[in-house]
Image (cartoon, rainbow, N blue to C red):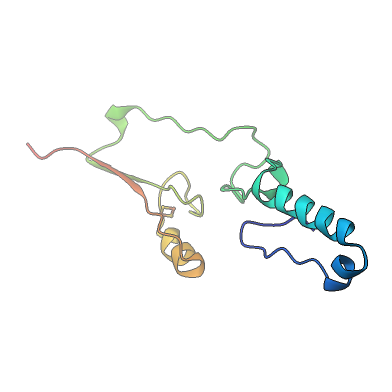
Amino acid sequence: IEPGPNMVIFVPLNIILLDPSAGAAAVGYLAYKKFISKDKCCKAMVNLHIQKDNPKVVHAFDMEDLGDKAVYCRCWRSKKFPLCDGSHTQHNDETGDNVGPLIIKRKEA
Ligand code: FES
């Protein structure tokens, strides 16, 4: 098990009591994995579903094609990605996150 960002480090008391050096080594290793190690395995992915076979998801639009207003997803949960479909509301409710769309609109003359 890899320690996550909110995981509590737990080392059984009997390990510490029977062999304090092993207990100290275990605590040190787990603390290293939690706070210092940069293993990719412990970092959360932002993109869970969109074009996972693509090494990098990129979208480009011409400014002239945007119309008066364009709303782009930044939570990566939209079924109409890269456009926002409001899925960020459910994501925020479920996770406590606070993400929302990027809105680009033409200035009123
Ligand atoms: S659906 Fe992703 S920001 Fe709205």
